[in-house]
Figure 1 (tube, helix red, strand yellow):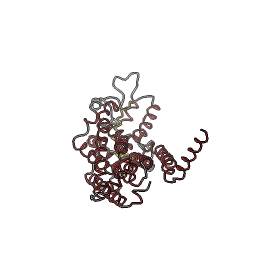
Figure 2 (cartoon, rainbow, N blue to C red; figure 1 turned 90 degrees about the vertical axis):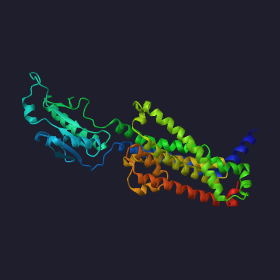
Figure 3 (tube, rainbow, N blue to C red; figure 1 turned 45 degrees about the horizontal axis):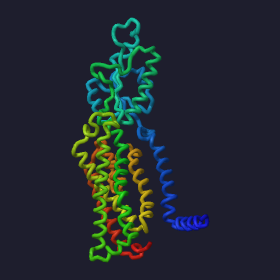
Length: 395
């Protein structure tokens, strides 16, 4: 019995290790891709809310005294404005167009000099710091300026307050809306999840579509029919895409309706996204499904078995995850059109842009056309494979 086990083990090990393609894709490639992915994730975690090292913060100030102005570092540009311009700056901060607004009481230094916390009958002079934490530059500027002002506050034995509630700002001085905060979180997290949901939906069916028929011997029978090879390839891709898309949509719907619990916001995505956003998400999801199905079908057509096709498909999942995480590198979806000519990567950028309310109709259209064109090319290659007896009947 021991000899039989050793003989079978030797035979199986010889088969596996002599198949260089299978060994590379199943043993070497996944580990290398995971190492690359985790390395990138570790380096990128700090960049989600990071700011370029040479960035100069734009801080608008009303009545800033010389005592505070002198403490500002060179990386902060102070722009003095009048009280009449405060509302416009707050709107720009809310729209993530500038960094910070500081509002000091008139004659701040004089008020601080005469204020006595024991005998005072009126509130201490209050410094307002208006920011938007959904903008990394604003968040970092708020941290830098707060450290300076609180340090100055400590040296003056608490003779003034910072961001005390007022009639103008009873709930604080943070200008990020619920939609901004919702988009900030899911705009980075959800694209990767969308891609994985779509891919796993296709992965459940596509690898077996052609290689399975090879193993069962039914592919040769199908190929002797009068149907064109290109029609067969297109039919394979489209039929699998229907099931893949249904699976992806089901997963996406479940995720959308689970977001209220995840984010602890009443109504979740329905509060912030409308028909336009969901329609665009569906268009990108549909064309991305075509890309995944065409790639997996191509792998299936080239593979000798379902097992080999599945081995080819695993490293591609890591590629999808990296594309889903790519928005962390740029801090959002890029606007340059050439990024949207890269299949899978373009879908991740579109998902990010739609979820962050930064939609470009041109980029969405380019992504959809690119994905469809890529699918047509893959279908053509599969048709060529169907014409190759060496690949079709090689087991």
